[in-house]
Image 1 (tube, rainbow, N blue to C red):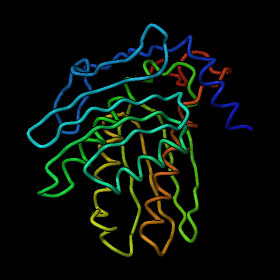
Image 2 (cartoon, rainbow, N blue to C red; image 1 turned 180 degrees about the vertical axis):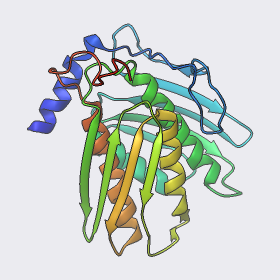
Image 3 (spheres, rainbow, N blue to C red; image 1 turned 90 degrees about the vertical axis):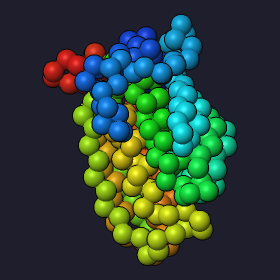
Length: 243
Protein backbone atom coordinates (compact mmCIF):
# COMPACT_ATOMS: atom_id res chain seq x y z
CA UNK A 1 0.00 0.00 0.00
CA UNK A 2 2.78 2.45 0.91
CA UNK A 3 4.53 1.71 -2.36
CA UNK A 4 1.37 2.59 -4.32
CA UNK A 5 0.92 5.80 -2.34
CA UNK A 6 4.48 6.81 -3.18
CA UNK A 7 3.89 6.12 -6.87
CA UNK A 8 0.66 8.13 -6.87
CA UNK A 9 2.44 10.94 -5.08
CA UNK A 10 5.09 10.93 -7.80
CA UNK A 11 2.53 11.55 -10.49
CA UNK A 12 0.43 13.98 -8.47
CA UNK A 13 3.33 16.17 -7.42
CA UNK A 14 4.93 16.87 -10.77
CA UNK A 15 3.66 20.42 -11.16
CA UNK A 16 6.75 21.69 -9.37
CA UNK A 17 9.13 19.77 -11.64
CA UNK A 18 11.09 20.63 -14.71
CA UNK A 19 11.07 17.62 -17.03
CA UNK A 20 13.25 19.36 -19.57
CA UNK A 21 15.99 19.54 -16.98
CA UNK A 22 18.71 22.11 -16.55
CA UNK A 23 22.09 20.45 -16.99
CA UNK A 24 24.91 22.21 -15.16
CA UNK A 25 27.72 23.55 -17.31
CA UNK A 26 30.24 21.68 -15.16
CA UNK A 27 28.66 18.31 -15.99
CA UNK A 28 31.31 15.70 -16.68
CA UNK A 29 30.55 12.60 -18.67
CA UNK A 30 31.93 9.10 -18.35
CA UNK A 31 34.86 9.96 -20.58
CA UNK A 32 35.84 12.93 -18.39
CA UNK A 33 34.66 15.44 -20.98
CA UNK A 34 32.71 18.61 -20.17
CA UNK A 35 29.25 18.05 -21.68
CA UNK A 36 28.00 21.61 -21.29
CA UNK A 37 24.21 21.71 -21.38
CA UNK A 38 23.67 18.06 -22.13
CA UNK A 39 24.03 18.18 -25.89
CA UNK A 40 22.37 15.28 -27.65
CA UNK A 41 19.70 14.58 -25.01
CA UNK A 42 16.15 14.59 -26.28
CA UNK A 43 13.39 15.00 -23.71
CA UNK A 44 10.02 13.50 -24.50
CA UNK A 45 6.63 15.10 -23.87
CA UNK A 46 7.80 18.15 -21.94
CA UNK A 47 4.42 19.83 -22.38
CA UNK A 48 2.63 17.24 -20.23
CA UNK A 49 5.44 17.60 -17.66
CA UNK A 50 5.94 13.89 -17.21
CA UNK A 51 9.35 12.77 -16.03
CA UNK A 52 10.47 11.07 -19.21
CA UNK A 53 13.65 11.39 -21.25
CA UNK A 54 15.20 9.80 -24.32
CA UNK A 55 18.71 9.69 -25.71
CA UNK A 56 20.47 8.37 -28.78
CA UNK A 57 24.19 7.59 -28.63
CA UNK A 58 26.17 6.35 -31.62
CA UNK A 59 29.90 5.69 -31.57
CA UNK A 60 32.30 3.48 -33.48
CA UNK A 61 31.61 0.84 -30.82
CA UNK A 62 27.87 1.05 -30.06
CA UNK A 63 24.56 2.32 -31.41
CA UNK A 64 22.00 2.89 -28.65
CA UNK A 65 18.53 4.39 -28.36
CA UNK A 66 17.13 4.50 -24.83
CA UNK A 67 14.03 6.03 -23.26
CA UNK A 68 13.30 6.12 -19.53
CA UNK A 69 10.14 7.06 -17.64
CA UNK A 70 10.41 7.66 -13.91
CA UNK A 71 6.67 7.49 -13.23
CA UNK A 72 5.95 4.30 -15.10
CA UNK A 73 4.33 0.93 -14.61
CA UNK A 74 7.33 -1.38 -14.78
CA UNK A 75 7.12 -2.05 -18.52
CA UNK A 76 10.35 -2.71 -20.42
CA UNK A 77 11.22 -3.33 -24.06
CA UNK A 78 14.81 -4.50 -24.30
CA UNK A 79 16.74 -5.42 -27.42
CA UNK A 80 20.46 -5.62 -26.78
CA UNK A 81 23.28 -7.99 -27.67
CA UNK A 82 23.83 -8.86 -23.98
CA UNK A 83 21.13 -11.29 -22.78
CA UNK A 84 22.11 -11.24 -19.10
CA UNK A 85 21.96 -7.42 -19.04
CA UNK A 86 18.50 -7.61 -20.65
CA UNK A 87 17.42 -9.80 -17.74
CA UNK A 88 18.87 -7.43 -15.13
CA UNK A 89 17.36 -4.31 -16.74
CA UNK A 90 13.98 -6.00 -16.88
CA UNK A 91 14.21 -6.64 -13.12
CA UNK A 92 15.35 -3.06 -12.49
CA UNK A 93 12.38 -1.61 -14.40
CA UNK A 94 9.82 -4.01 -12.92
CA UNK A 95 10.80 -3.50 -9.30
CA UNK A 96 11.33 0.26 -9.70
CA UNK A 97 8.05 0.72 -11.60
CA UNK A 98 9.95 2.46 -14.39
CA UNK A 99 9.20 2.38 -18.10
CA UNK A 100 12.36 1.49 -19.98
CA UNK A 101 13.01 0.95 -23.66
CA UNK A 102 16.46 0.04 -24.95
CA UNK A 103 17.64 -0.78 -28.44
CA UNK A 104 21.38 -1.39 -28.47
CA UNK A 105 23.90 -2.90 -30.82
CA UNK A 106 27.59 -3.10 -30.05
CA UNK A 107 30.91 -4.74 -30.82
CA UNK A 108 30.13 -7.85 -28.78
CA UNK A 109 32.36 -9.81 -31.13
CA UNK A 110 35.16 -8.25 -29.07
CA UNK A 111 33.35 -8.47 -25.71
CA UNK A 112 30.33 -7.00 -23.91
CA UNK A 113 32.23 -4.15 -22.26
CA UNK A 114 31.41 -1.24 -24.58
CA UNK A 115 27.73 -2.14 -24.88
CA UNK A 116 27.22 -2.52 -21.12
CA UNK A 117 29.16 0.66 -20.37
CA UNK A 118 27.32 2.76 -22.93
CA UNK A 119 23.89 1.57 -21.81
CA UNK A 120 24.86 2.66 -18.29
CA UNK A 121 25.87 6.05 -19.65
CA UNK A 122 22.59 6.48 -21.52
CA UNK A 123 20.47 5.37 -18.57
CA UNK A 124 22.23 7.84 -16.29
CA UNK A 125 21.79 10.70 -18.75
CA UNK A 126 18.07 10.07 -19.15
CA UNK A 127 17.51 9.79 -15.39
CA UNK A 128 19.23 13.11 -14.79
CA UNK A 129 17.33 14.82 -17.57
CA UNK A 130 13.96 13.34 -16.56
CA UNK A 131 14.30 14.52 -12.94
CA UNK A 132 14.88 18.12 -13.98
CA UNK A 133 15.35 20.47 -11.03
CA UNK A 134 14.41 17.67 -8.56
CA UNK A 135 11.79 19.73 -6.73
CA UNK A 136 9.80 17.71 -4.24
CA UNK A 137 11.75 14.46 -4.45
CA UNK A 138 12.61 12.42 -1.37
CA UNK A 139 16.26 12.37 -2.53
CA UNK A 140 17.52 9.55 -0.26
CA UNK A 141 16.84 5.82 -0.10
CA UNK A 142 18.34 2.67 1.41
CA UNK A 143 16.98 -0.70 0.38
CA UNK A 144 17.85 -4.31 1.26
CA UNK A 145 16.74 -7.04 -1.14
CA UNK A 146 17.21 -10.79 -0.59
CA UNK A 147 17.41 -13.29 -3.42
CA UNK A 148 17.31 -16.71 -1.79
CA UNK A 149 20.68 -17.00 0.02
CA UNK A 150 21.99 -13.63 -1.26
CA UNK A 151 21.45 -10.21 0.29
CA UNK A 152 22.17 -6.90 -1.45
CA UNK A 153 21.84 -3.32 -0.26
CA UNK A 154 21.64 -0.16 -2.38
CA UNK A 155 21.86 3.35 -0.94
CA UNK A 156 21.13 6.40 -3.10
CA UNK A 157 21.45 10.16 -2.72
CA UNK A 158 20.16 12.13 -5.71
CA UNK A 159 22.77 14.73 -4.87
CA UNK A 160 24.19 16.10 -8.14
CA UNK A 161 27.53 14.85 -6.77
CA UNK A 162 28.51 11.66 -8.60
CA UNK A 163 30.14 9.09 -6.35
CA UNK A 164 30.18 5.29 -6.40
CA UNK A 165 31.11 2.75 -3.74
CA UNK A 166 30.94 -0.96 -4.52
CA UNK A 167 31.46 -3.87 -2.15
CA UNK A 168 30.85 -7.24 -3.81
CA UNK A 169 32.78 -10.48 -4.07
CA UNK A 170 31.29 -13.02 -6.44
CA UNK A 171 32.04 -16.76 -6.33
CA UNK A 172 32.49 -16.85 -10.11
CA UNK A 173 33.74 -14.41 -12.73
CA UNK A 174 31.14 -15.39 -15.31
CA UNK A 175 27.36 -15.82 -15.42
CA UNK A 176 26.85 -17.57 -18.71
CA UNK A 177 28.73 -15.39 -21.19
CA UNK A 178 28.49 -12.29 -18.97
CA UNK A 179 31.61 -11.13 -17.11
CA UNK A 180 30.76 -10.10 -13.55
CA UNK A 181 33.22 -7.17 -13.51
CA UNK A 182 30.84 -5.44 -15.94
CA UNK A 183 28.34 -4.96 -13.10
CA UNK A 184 30.77 -2.44 -11.60
CA UNK A 185 31.31 -0.79 -14.98
CA UNK A 186 27.58 -0.39 -15.61
CA UNK A 187 26.76 0.96 -12.15
CA UNK A 188 29.67 3.40 -12.04
CA UNK A 189 28.87 4.93 -15.42
CA UNK A 190 25.19 5.12 -14.49
CA UNK A 191 25.97 6.96 -11.24
CA UNK A 192 28.44 9.28 -12.97
CA UNK A 193 26.06 10.37 -15.72
CA UNK A 194 23.03 10.57 -13.42
CA UNK A 195 25.16 12.61 -10.98
CA UNK A 196 23.99 10.59 -7.99
CA UNK A 197 25.77 9.12 -5.00
CA UNK A 198 25.41 5.34 -5.22
CA UNK A 199 26.57 2.75 -2.70
CA UNK A 200 26.12 -0.94 -3.53
CA UNK A 201 26.89 -3.67 -1.00
CA UNK A 202 26.43 -7.39 -1.50
CA UNK A 203 26.51 -8.62 2.08
CA UNK A 204 26.68 -12.31 1.27
CA UNK A 205 25.61 -15.02 -1.13
CA UNK A 206 26.76 -18.22 -2.79
CA UNK A 207 25.18 -18.01 -6.24
CA UNK A 208 26.59 -15.26 -8.46
CA UNK A 209 23.40 -14.92 -10.48
CA UNK A 210 21.34 -14.48 -7.30
CA UNK A 211 23.76 -11.88 -5.94
CA UNK A 212 23.70 -9.72 -9.08
CA UNK A 213 19.94 -10.10 -9.40
CA UNK A 214 19.50 -8.82 -5.84
CA UNK A 215 21.62 -5.77 -6.74
CA UNK A 216 19.48 -4.79 -9.72
CA UNK A 217 16.22 -5.33 -7.86
CA UNK A 218 17.52 -3.22 -4.97
CA UNK A 219 18.66 -0.54 -7.41
CA UNK A 220 15.17 -0.32 -8.86
CA UNK A 221 13.45 -0.15 -5.47
CA UNK A 222 15.93 2.40 -4.06
CA UNK A 223 15.74 4.66 -7.11
CA UNK A 224 11.94 4.51 -7.02
CA UNK A 225 11.99 5.62 -3.39
CA UNK A 226 14.58 8.38 -3.86
CA UNK A 227 12.79 9.90 -6.87
CA UNK A 228 9.30 9.72 -5.36
CA UNK A 229 7.56 13.03 -4.75
CA UNK A 230 7.01 13.91 -1.09
CA UNK A 231 4.23 16.53 -0.82
CA UNK A 232 5.82 17.85 2.38
CA UNK A 233 8.97 18.89 0.54
CA UNK A 234 8.91 22.51 -0.58
CA UNK A 235 11.31 23.14 -3.42
CA UNK A 236 14.39 20.95 -3.51
CA UNK A 237 15.41 18.83 -0.48
CA UNK A 238 18.62 20.73 0.27
CA UNK A 239 19.52 23.60 2.58
CA UNK A 240 21.54 24.97 -0.35
CA UNK A 241 18.33 25.53 -2.28
CA UNK A 242 19.57 23.66 -5.33
CA UNK A 243 20.60 20.15 -6.32
